Length: 251
Image (cartoon, rainbow, N blue to C red; front, top):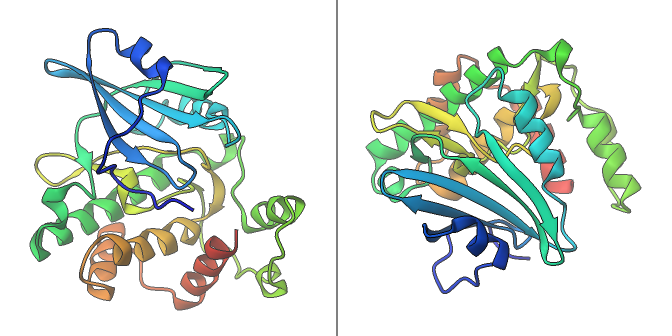
């Protein structure tokens, strides 16, 4: 399996990306764990992004639909166009201001990492407060995730069937890892990307994974987790953290 990261070597550019770019410059900015690629298309001060998923991996349709719904309430990319061809599926989005929370400037030192952790926490709180649970047509509950995983043939531990009682039901991001938060020049939260799994769930389904991802992307461990939780405005909940990390790892 590939590791999600900023590409460091040569990246083949799909034909559709070259077509959408026109005369704009093309810069690969992310490769996900399934081999999907995200490119920045730049022309002067303006920019757009193309997310491309190769044939045989999940199509971008789910994310296109979720962005269309969430865009009325939260700071997420606006989809300009989407489609597919023999090589895969793609979506073109307008750029949001800000840089990924794993941009070099946020992983360079302890102080910068603390800024990133707080922006991630504040961003999740804003998302959870703004997206209306009763109007959301998508689920990311533990029950629905377990059912989908087992239907796909995964052998999940029986212990996962005993989810903790819901603390607060919200519309979760669904992949709240650090790279999917954008941060403004002043260090404040600027927006979210990669919302293909967005849906209603306990807020700890997002928080547990967001905190865990701090270990993968920064030095600082539990101290940075405390910064994230403080910015979000919630006390640490070890039971829910353990459960939702186990669910993430298993599914």
